[in-house]
Length: 523
Image (cartoon, rainbow, N blue to C red; front, top):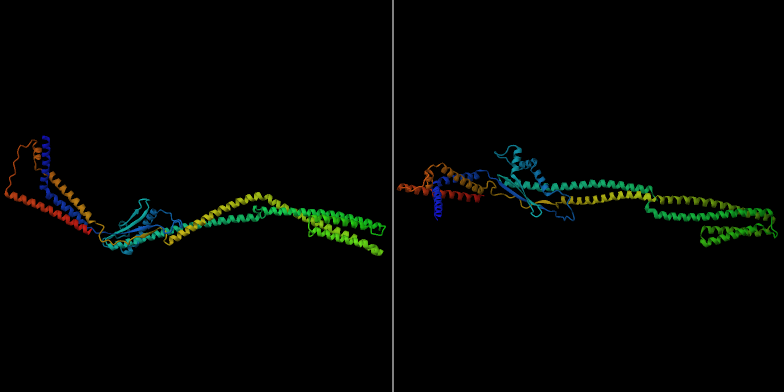
């Protein structure tokens, strides 16, 4: 219980000590507070005002669906925006704007072009806004600060147009570069394809008739040639048999003619003519069993039969004429037999030549068929190279067409582009200095200065103002205190000091309140 009473007395004593400190030092606190606030707040009205004009630029996505026309500009938007910003903040671009709008022309303005460019760069700001879901840039804000609000608005408008124009120009140039590259690659692929196609055509021309696609026709032609060869060989055999027979008849006729006539007065050669006629009729019957009457060999046998029958009739009519006519008639069949033998010899030679030609052609086509596997392999390799070149060409042609469409889209401003949402604002309040912020900073500075002043005064004050000070000085407890005896003049002086303190407090408070209100309305 005594400890609790002692703690309460200590707390009450410290409270009274603080109240006594405020009563003694409030003037030394309020005056530095007012001075510090006035110094900082007043500086905000002395510093030159800067007006900030801003505009927001929206990043618009392509109006054409990507499934129809895919963009050929693959550069990241953030990288492209940084590149455009660097180009716009270049010395040449900024000097153009400075000279166009006559910026920094005052007496206190920078003199050299480099200083003007550096000053303008400090007054330009670009703030990017991103989508929180995919971290993509959706818009960005371009701002410029100047001492004149209309100048700030004009410069911001110039910068906005540069951003929009440079973006369109950069995308169009990149798109055209991509299309030009695809055109060069397509031309190279076209040359390579033409070279492959020429090789294939040259190979096909060199191996005409031995190509894999001509195998069936070669087989058909070979089969037909073999059939013709077989027919020619059969005809040759028949002609050779006829030659032997004709030779035999000629020999028999000569022998019979040398021996004279037969007993009944008929020429001896009539028997030979009958034998020849029988043989020809037998051959005709055999040929008709295999061919029609329009077949050449059938027609030939018929003609020979007609000749032999005519010879037979002449021989049978020979006895009725004189001996002179008989001799002439006897020599006629011999001449005909010799003529037929000569014709037969010519036929044999013709058949042999035809057979030789057919055998040569058969050998040629057989050689083509034998060489076909190697030719097919060579053609397959050439065709594979041609197909590969054609595939590359078709793919490049498709990509080049898509790239050209993308370039047209960029030229027609249908791709990704920058669009200004609102015109650059005309600022009515300065962005710097912010008088409300300076008012707050001044209040903080005044409080710090007042507290520091009171602390220093108390630190260097060696007077005793409380019981604790006496205890600390004497090192013993205080048994009694002599109360202060104040005269009427002292009381009036104390009252005046208290009134002055309250008046000073009210004055400082009113000054700070009025200054803060004024700063709020003026910005």
